[in-house]
Length: 81
Image (cartoon, rainbow, N blue to C red; front, side, top):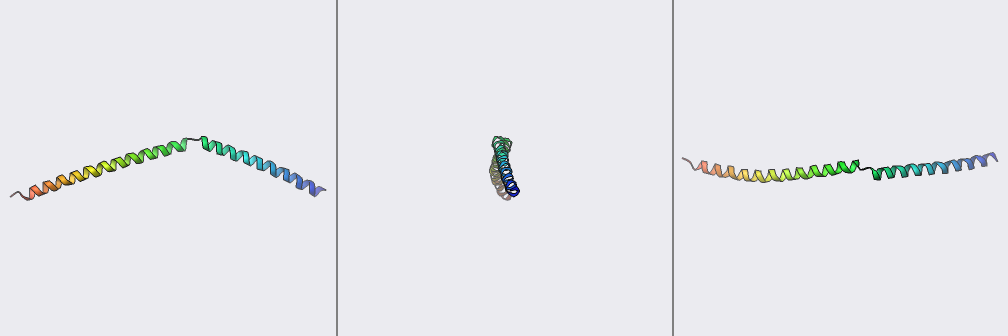
């Protein structure tokens, strides 16, 4: 009789712990969904990468034009006496 009571008591305790863990997991899930600090960091990272891409494109375009100008200058200087 004592063994059976112990098993029943343990089962009830296990069920109570499972319910407690479920509510803790549910609280964590709700807090995670409501938390927007990570989303803000990701938005800033996307913005910074877009700005970096624009800067790279501008430097590439200016570099190509600058190279063409130096090539023209080199050609004209080589024709001087």
